[in-house]
Amino acid sequence: MFNRRDLFLAAGAAAGAAAVLKALPATAAEAADLPRREVELVAPPYVHPHEQATSRGPEVVAFKMTIIEKEHVIDDDGTKIHAFTYNGSIPGPLMVVHEGDYLELTLVNPPTNQFDHNIDFHASTGALGGGALTHINPGEEVTLRFKATRAGVFIYHCAPEGPMIPWHVVCGMNGAVLVLPREGLTDGAGKTLAYDRIYYVGEQDFYVPRDAGGAYKTYASAADSFVDTMAVMRGLIPTHVVFNGAAGALTEKNALPAKVGETVLIIHSSANRDTRPHLIGGHGDYVWLMGKFANPPMRDLETWFVPGGSAVAALYTFRQPGVYAYLNHNLIEAVLLGATAHFRVEGKWNDDLMTQVRRPGPFG
Image 1 (cartoon, rainbow, N blue to C red):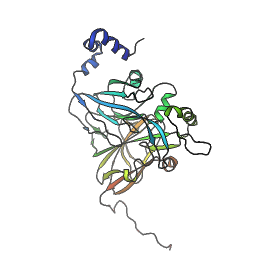
Image 2 (cartoon, rainbow, N blue to C red):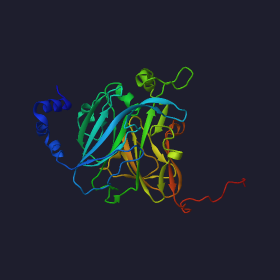
Image 3 (cartoon, one colour):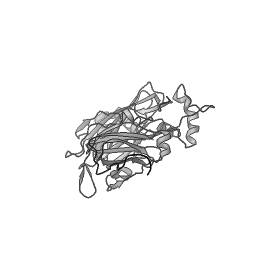
Image 4 (cartoon, one colour):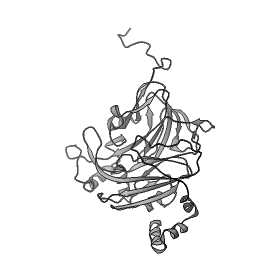
């Protein structure tokens, strides 16, 4: 039985590219005639330039990602894992399109890699999220196109088969897609919402084996680490829970900049475990729980929930300057395991919102 990839190859060999296009479903054939825009991806927490609202009709938005297997440091102690990544970052880049657009991805698995990979888009329809059509060995590449039929934030991840699925995900192979409504974001009652900045935070759980003395182990290759890592994974207790691939990746000198009065859209994904983000000293002015823009956003949330295997969008206008901690409000995971980020906000302090009435001093 042929899968779609086999069908393309067989039809192409037999009748040429024109016959293959003619044999495709009408919507796919029509997509070939739409305007085409190629977009260069950027590493999180940043996001490639995009329109928030568009008056243009649907188009094909083309991206290219290279799978990079590499050694990766995940904490200040120098703990290393053999990571699997999309484009070299954990999480993989955020891809932005509009509802009704066609997202086209060319996925490259260089010959220097050891493992086969693919990609499962939660934003897509059919064929295991595209996983059945994107399975590539080292030295291969594949191009997938799907129609973005639902507005919202959706994760993507590697899903080869069997135990390889969770292993590849916890080794870093996940990211997100932002499908904006063509008219842009609204409050659910007709008011337009816009953002000055957008940041993508991907929460990642790691499972690093320890030796008999309790020290984290290192391995010559990813394959060598597989059996021990699977044993830790079966315990369901991560050794690290971090933002954007490493403890401290978004803190101190890596803090996310903003200014008082700016509105920031925070995309937060978690491919494997539930989490509950909280902005200390701020709120979620508008939060699309489960990340779907067809539903009206919740208002004024202190903490919001991100189920494993999903992403959430939260909009906040900063009102005070200073350093804000943005964290998983399982404080054990935030403080002890690494799931913390910082926003560094510039501007003038507003005493009406908060003031220190009396400085610390002797009691009485």
